[in-house]
Length: 120
Image (cartoon, rainbow, N blue to C red; front, side, top):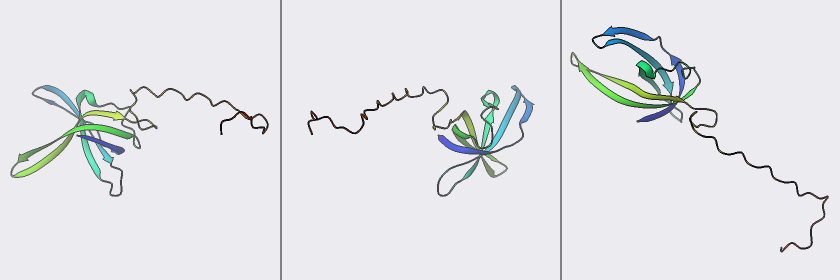
């Protein structure tokens, strides 16, 4: 799944040690655009955390999976990001090639005279 939303809050970085070694997790709060904006808490794990992209106000394009698990009769749902990219001002990803520049339009103004050999 994919979500494009504005980053509103960066929660404290969480770290720890597990049976597979050291881990780190960064939770962020993003807000969707539209008539009824929604806030979503997204978890970013390990080397996918890029502090450069995590500036409040930045629009992020987030690829994620949703996972639920049961514990003591209650269900908990996580939104786990597997790819996070910041969008630039044009709304495209930073790795994309920009379009070629538009060549300048020549100025045909010759003082108001209209050539007589025009077909219209």
